[in-house]
Image (cartoon, rainbow, N blue to C red; front, side, top):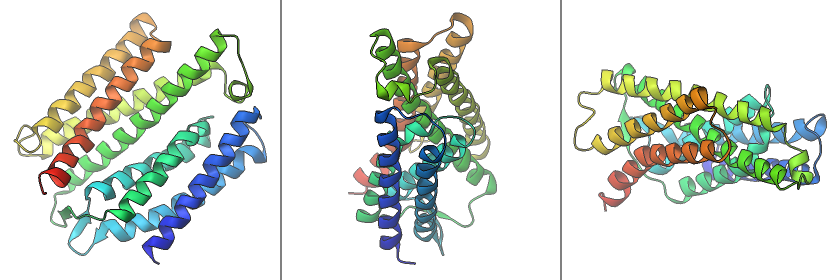
Length: 269
């Protein structure tokens, strides 16, 4: 099937799903019934179209094409898939109001700027596992960051005694906070496994072309470790949790996409 058609289909469905979530949020509707299921279903169909497009773009005869925009689109797809899957068990679909438009941006960048960075078929299984675990860690921490922002907005409105329609549609503050730290906890485990697998299967994690990625990933690990320790020891929440979460997220994104952009988009030119 034509990649352009799949990309446009996925983009339209993502925007429709995000729009349905936004309408329900700002009207303050409760998270139940058709109003909750419909945007998830629309988003899932879009996720399928996006996945097929990625399969065609990434699975090539030489191996896996993980060029910058392919990788960006793949991370976006993984985030959407995690969001939709988690929404079946926890009330996190509201994150789609920010995640789905970003996924649309990733799709159009991938469509507009195709590039090649092929991982050969001969790549060791351990290395492929490292890439998969890293992808999941980055994706989950992205969800956690959006959740932290939404939690901060909710907390601000409640303290300002302005619980409008947007706030009424959200789960209780305690539930939102618990979901945030559950995401961070699982993401931290995945990030730990990513670092362990990297040191195990890469010849030299501090080689010149990956040193900055390794160092930034370790810094992000310490940021999230400190946040989780602060939560356990001192009950950190609110603005403190937001600052630490977003700081770790920025460092982690710089570790992967920052280094990848420099190597593939800047230095190649």
